[in-house]
Image (cartoon, rainbow, N blue to C red; front, top):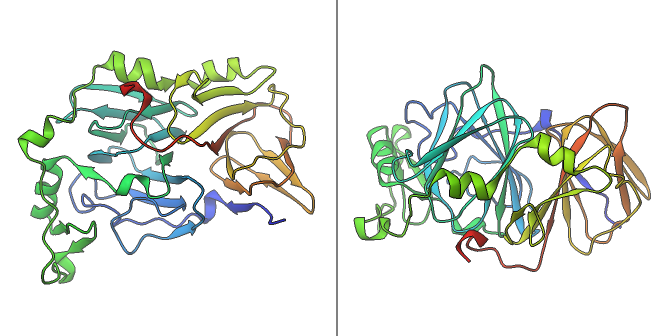
Length: 318
């Protein structure tokens, strides 16, 4: 049986040219990480740590203070949890329909079909971890029109193929390839302006509340029976030192373990590894294993596993 695949936080390889806003002031210091799956990077410079197709993608964004990610949308689920720092998530055609501030361990399931962005409003470099639905993550990123227009002013052009070209490097669109079209006013009508009650009330959960629920059993965070009722093609649970979920078990689908607090010992027949916050472990389908805190004190991890639900629009729209 194949052993788990691990990506250590300290070994993550960033890409600083992953998206069309990589040269735009205010966004030009962000780093993108593709941990599992192909992700949605538009740059050939993006390093993919684990290429396995498991039904969803795992990625991350690292940003210094006051750095933001520009307004965009996805066709499948985009779920974030805060690994470190203090983050403002905002949404709407111009980013002013609503906002919410999240801190370590907090999670947000952002509804499909709306423009969203995020900004590090803390005092240090921060990291958010991402789960994107589907093996192809919905076919890429849909940018708000002003993002594409601003990028062109700073030398970046996105092709209709989804590939990024940097005119500052002397790159140009190949012959016969057109630039990515900007959404028309008619097309923009399909991107609603959701209220804070809709986005926050439906898709945001605070770490301390989830940790309180994960007492005696894991807290089902996202899923058909989760505290966020969504079926995005994967389920998310929070497991803590009080969950009593350390028995040896196996899943019929690959799943991912991502510690938030404390250190965890992952055991399987033939091996043992210790996981720390920021690390990611991909456990193969059918592998009997256990995960439990490796020392006393607070410990929590997110557990993500694929389901048979197709990746697609958020259940908010059902």
